[in-house]
Image (cartoon, rainbow, N blue to C red; front, side):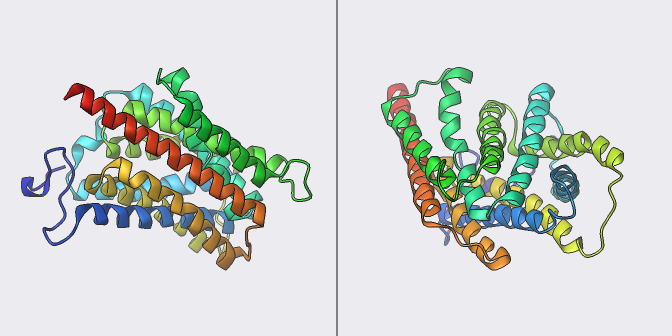
Length: 313
């Protein structure tokens, strides 16, 4: 994307105006992006009685694809349409599309706060997968965080309790595994050679075509009164990806990663306002444990990066 070189730092991040702290701008953009992601899920939940998860994924990806393509064309970022790793992009898009269908399904089945808390276990699952898939070393701190996060998930699911979530919890954990953990592994790999815009574009495009045969087979039809939900799902989904990408141009990933966990706050707020749901005490406790576990993982990741930089200095 053509950029004024005066607004690009040495590491490629955009520079905010001199009177604004660029890290603050990045954090604010990430907060808004996270809120839009939860809003997308709330809109999807609002039309879940009419459209099944695959139909909602198709509408979301199709609308977001139009929005993203218009943005890339208007900014003349033609390089975003080029990829040197088509198989990797297809794998990421396939896993992400299936994962998103499970996300929408889970939100349809559970209160928003419960589902969002289970989704946050994806970061913990990534720690388990990293040594197997990426060959990364995981120390006792991160394994301890995995255990804490597992306890937090049990608090939310409440096996054997009166509020046991049952099989919907399996839907939520599958969404976390596919839509957060496996996608994170793909993004770590693709991020070494592909731009964020390229990966987002191919995710939207491939995801749209993957769900199109089902739409044609199922005889999908627009239902009166769902326009706001459809537009909200697509626009919020597309806008959140654009803002999230911009946030990483202003601030480092290590600074922005904890901000993503404000999603639980937005989920509680939207769930309460839109659907009259309020988290139970076990959900509060479980969410706190999962967020804490993820923060420990992020902290150890940051420490590891600092140590590696010292070794190479």
